[in-house]
Image 1 (tube, rainbow, N blue to C red):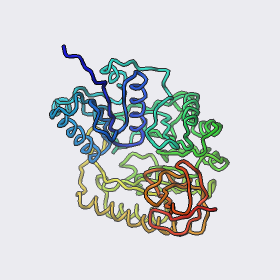
Image 2 (image 1 turned 60 degrees about the vertical axis):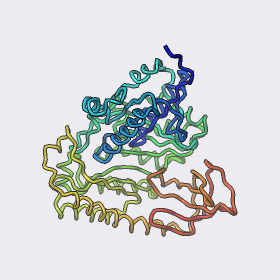
Image 3 (image 1 turned 135 degrees about the horizontal axis):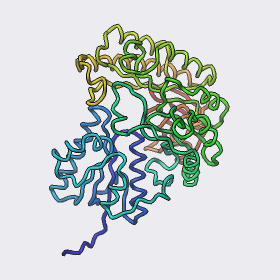
Image 4 (image 1 turned 90 degrees about the horizontal axis):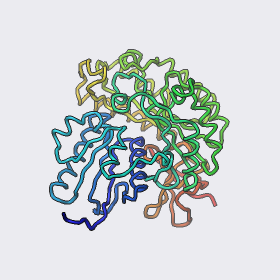
Length: 436
């Protein structure tokens, strides 16, 4: 038998959302704890083992995942890598089909099969590492996954098929992880889950998101706590009270509403009406006057008429969301909406998506203009060329506005919280200068 001289080098490739990124970070942490060299999306072509962590949320994400797997399958056939493993949502949902279609992959794993993946490396799953992980984000911010799975029954969503039922983590484990992150220099934690507002229902028998925020506030070194992926129906209103009184919980909420027409909301099984949403959002603004709302809308759902779409557009214009993204409906097997005819042509979906974003672009531009002349605290994310790029307390990384600051006359470190005077505005960015 030929003796292997070179040590294995593992490269983990992440597709999809920040929840997948946390999963990848946990994979790397476990491998490194077993003395296996691993990194996240390494720039050097020195890895002999590739792990692709896939997304299976919508058609475009599935295509990207499959194309990435095929890319590395080709690299394996050429002899450039030795092993190829696939994990994550797409692998969980379509494992049997993928095994037949892409035999070059050495093994496929579902979303809850990390111990099985580690076994391929003769590595043990180390329970004592729960809450300890090597972050792949810039060292001053990190994601904190507070639960797994989802109990909601939205008709368009396949996440429960891939992630299972909602399972909360204990408050103690989350506080411990936040302390661990603070020790390595993290200043901002972003709470993520398939559904934040369900937190605590399974283990504490009541919604505990507000209480969790109060406990995380006590962690020294954490300056900003941000909320992502909250469901609007039966929203725990005490969260707004905590946000209003806190110096750490950002006046920011990512709350995907998906639509505004009652008939579409009913077909989507969203368990909420437009008036309910208006009441909730008004309560948020009354309690936290400077709150910035990020939402997501879904266009082209089966049966969506032009009138129903216009109702959505009117709602967006009326509510003046600070941040908004849009998805085009994807017909997903296994969801209840798959029983409905996917009757909106692709070109209509594209057109409606563009029309929504045209409305939002104007709203965003006007809101940014209103910030000219204000002094805002900015977290510096990076320096590129002659400029620093940072974010205000109202913005999450990668999806929201950035503040662009000339670097020639001032110095700041990445991770600094700096006072910045806003001097100009674009549709989705602010221009500023450091306050001396």
